[in-house]
Length: 282
Length: 232
Image (cartoon, rainbow over all chains, first blue to last red; front, side, top):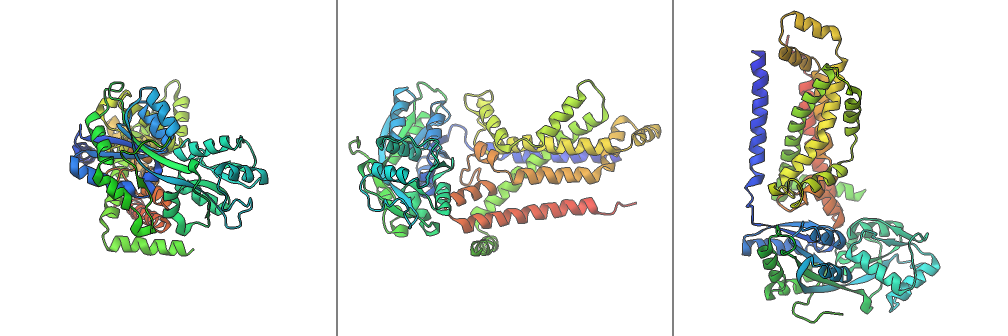
């Protein structure tokens, strides 16, 4: 009697297990599209708006993996993603040159800004050149909080340090979080330091931050997003039709219109500016 | 401080209004972590009991490995499971990466050594004479093992609670193998990380409060079973 009890418990457990296991497998097999993208597109809420629309239109199921641009391209270069939405132009060109991607298309831009505490210990407020502002921060030894995660924002920040002729690595004023943009802004706010951020994430978090916009408008601060299909000739397992459908969707007139209006109701100004079909910035 | 109170208010509001998204996330968390705990109990108790009751060369090494496994960082498990499940990895053809099943696998891997370690310690702690006595009364070996497991019920339920608590509160592996996909693999912990990143601290705290409430209810039930007087 006792033994029968035992086995029935295990059989029940296995049945429960089988029941649970069966449900996830229902999702259509070839219908999956892995979109590797940056945290900024997710944290701003843009993808929450666009992805359901794409799914409804095409019937594909989108698996959005929001990581830094560096990690997104690393996934692409292993054939572990189908399509990328990224903002790290120099790294993207390398990605394309290595034959990992096809059909790189300009989607939209916004801009980076240098933010910092209102006390502004380095006195950079209103400066026109990002590189000069970085030089001033370094000269004063005011702490700068870096993403340090190979994201698009981090890549841009490194470009600016290079233009400023400074190698901040290992300097006392240079700290790295290794976190996403939202988290890094929180850290910078809490520790009253400077940081470089995209405007979209800053605007969406502004209410909780003690940080002000100090430098903006420099041409080097443009933040440009491209969509790239992962090369199906190099990675046969890639879902090429779905990737192409997503890229076409992102540059379609309808979606570009949505992007132009996104965030206006909440922040009074758009978070992204549509650029499909326009010439490249560089 | 205000944020925490706002968060608690928000949690209650989300629950009483039956917010679809939050309920879905909560249910998925329970389903995934419950199933992972079930699997880990099956494997962990078998493994722990087996190692506790047998003597073989290299046994100490196995025990050390199990005990080390109890402290393996979930994010390391997540990375390994990801590499195994990659399209171009050894189990790529199963197409399991970024599915709830992938989270179950990772969490089961995390919980199994915890359950095995607890089982091993609790079964081994039973007096040697008890085994001999049970066998002498004519029980088969399987019956003897079942009696021992029943005898160790208290610590074994503690093992279940530790395993479940370990995986439902775990975030590193879940976000890596699940991808935090809305309506599909988003669980309470990964949603909390995302909402924190978005600066929605009140929602993040609300999700944390819900997670605590859920874990409390599960543990209350298990504790009730554990502490209940044995029927004589």
